[in-house]
Length: 68
Image (cartoon, rainbow, N blue to C red):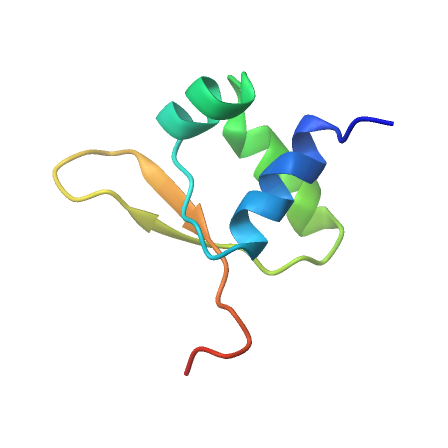
């Protein structure tokens, strides 16, 4: 069974990548990244956000356990 968009984005984040709406649209055909992030956060998955400098766009990322 194929992974859902939500699962694919979670795996992408767990692999240490940051994701922006542009990446989500291009890589995952996801045009409402904020909604996916909210659903993941509602499952108590800790996802952080930072503003992309020079824009009002956010990118989302996870702190990996081996990072300090």
